[in-house]
Image (tube, rainbow, N blue to C red):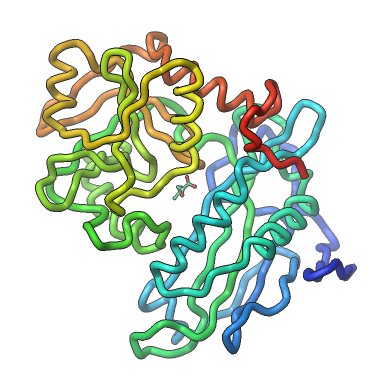
Length: 357
Ligand code: COI
């Protein structure tokens, strides 16, 4: 193994690569991992040195607190390859910022942005050949922090690990999705951890989602936990509707909704493309009324993994609201194309969102 030292980071290179040339569109999301991973330990009140090492198992004492109490947060981000083979990260500092918002809420230590960015860029440089050179495909990057103390008392851990792993991916959903409005279970509550990318948020969604899956829906549209009246998120994505020609998305100010980076990018692009965008409360009744009036012209989910995923139909209290066919979804299609062109370097990035590495 070849070990190199760069300022603030040590790198141990893998002697072999697992990379096989295959069609990246056939990849199953999150199944294959690249040759290396970044790892850093928090001990005695501070983060130690950052290392990049060959990808592999980590051993864990069964008493490690994250396994019992879920003190664990993560991020999702992507690297793209342009036609010249250059690797581009999309808004990476936003992820560095957001993991710390999540960490703070889960009573975990923040990871300094510089450490996050150094680990990220060195890891992606080392595994650059894993970034698929095909539009629609990318390298999914998963930074995460978890409690690493062996202790069963319920308290904030004194030890943590920060890691980054990467997985080549195509889109999370292979096409438009059928969703159902959830009126019984909740993803998040006011004062809770809905705005954080906490591991437990995703675990809590599994059972209600599995019930919806049995009815043929790929995702749920979560509603507020008080009245189950107002729309919050669509599964693991933020959600946007087009009423007439106005884009409307739930506002993220009440802390039950994740402030998505894709969501923010879509809002910017939509405004610059000349659309009116409203961030506000949206009731299920408003959605049904808009559909009845023939005004529900488009609906889509937004997220890093899912990108922009068109919603085909929305189940509300036993009735499926069908939306216009994909060919008529001019708004989502136009925004998705512009966003994709920026990511893959087909057009200039006027926002400073791209960091070439
Ligand atoms: C992402 O879009 O990165 C997410 O976090 C969704 C993931 C849980 C599949």
